[in-house]
Image (cartoon, rainbow, N blue to C red):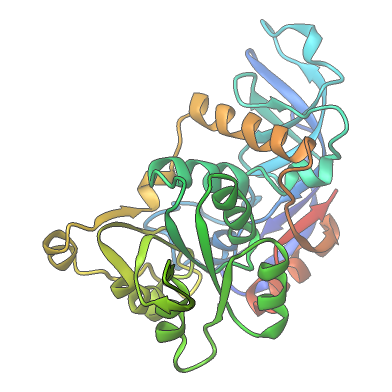
Length: 332
C-alpha cells in the first residue's frame, strides 16, 4: 500500500510517498480502507522534531492520527458485521491507504454524511465539543475564540452559539474575518490590528437596557485560546474574574504562558492541552455527537484545501503557511 512517511526530522520536504506492506488486523482489530485522512497543525510540529518531549516518535514514521473510510476486514474475535461499515477512527499513522484500529476505536458515520466531512471532524470536532463541555459554556456566556478561522475554531463558533453563548471571534485579516462572521460569530476582531485587545473588550460588552445603542466594556466568561504565544497571553486579561481560560493551542510554537498565581488571585480557572486528551469511550461519545450534528446540518466543518496522499508534503507546507482557512484534508 502507499503511505506518506517522514524520512527524517525537518521541513515538509522530508515527507515522501513510500510503499509499505498491507496491514493485517490482529485479534480485536478492524482493517479500514482509508478514504480521507485528517490533518492537524501539531503534526507539522512533530515532523520538525521540536515536540519530541511530548511525541516520542523517531523517523521513519507514518504521521497522522485520524481517518474516515470503510471497514474491509476484521481480526479474530470481532463481529463480522463491521465489514462494509463507514467509520471514522483515531489510529496511529493515518497518512496511508489502509490502517488497523482496535474495534473499540471506530465510530459509524451516519447515513447521508460524506466521508470527507466526517474526516474533518475526527480531531477538531471531538476536541471542540469536549472543550466546551469542560469549560461549561452555557446560555448567556460571553466567549472569546482565538484562532477562530482554523479547523477547530470554526467548529467552536458554531457549537458555542448552539449552546446559547455570545461569541466574539478573533481572526487575522479580512478574508478570515469574513468567514467567521458568516459562521455566526456575534462580533469579529482582527488580531492584525494594533488595538485588537481593546476592540475585543468592547465587543464583549452587553448593551445596557436603557442605552441599547451603546455597549458596556466587559470581559469574557470563557476565553478559548487556540493560538498560544503572545496573542494568547494578550487575551488573558480579557477573561472576567471568576471566568475560564483554556490555553489548548500552540501553533505559534508554545502555549500561552499565563501566570498561574495571577489566575488564582482573579479566580480564573485554567485549562490546558491535558484537559482535551480523552479516553476511548469519551472520544467515541463526542465523535458520535459531532457526526450527528453534521448529518443534521447543524454543524459545518470548513475544509480549506484538499491534497492527494502523494502530496502530503505540499499539504504540510500549506498548513504551515497559515494562509488557508479551516481544515486541510488528505484524499487517499
